[in-house]
Length: 240
Image (cartoon, rainbow, N blue to C red):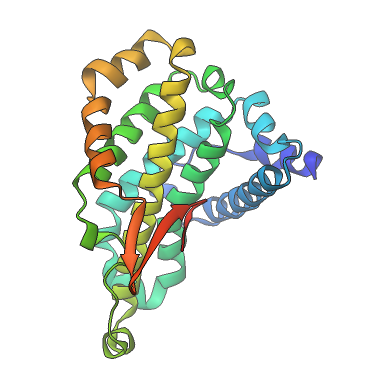
């Protein structure tokens, strides 16, 4: 398993915005999902984290970060203009949308290792900016707008189109990615002593992480009330 993970990690490359959805991009997406599942399994079993080590050994942490920023941009700029294709290309559009949370989850697991920041290079600034955007989102979202809080009646679910379902899934993915961004922001601050000055400046001067974090602590978006019970966001999903 370790040798296969190393092989898949070595194949990782940066895809441009216009390449998202191509056959080569889809193959890499599948490989990233495999790596994500293996990384999660290693954490759960408290075993050798060879996936994370491979990202660092083969200098692919930067690749993950750059691809994350690109897919975030795709979701913001391209997805709204292709929603009318949801009926005929739902799976491809969903996978492209879901790609963000796969990358964010992998980076979350990678930066749990305190040595990861040294292997991210200049991309750390991009990651800090990504985290700030997610913190701003979490600080501004109303409780009723947290995905899943408002339960839809059965009639509305039956009448929903592929476009409606894609938008609903995109909203859930945005929230999940933001929660990963919150965790990543914590890991970055934990590793502050080993971060380059440019990243520290980004965290403290250019982007007001402290103010955003204070608002998030007040709003507590990791909790939601649904069907009369309180649920908590844990390990990428809601749990009672």
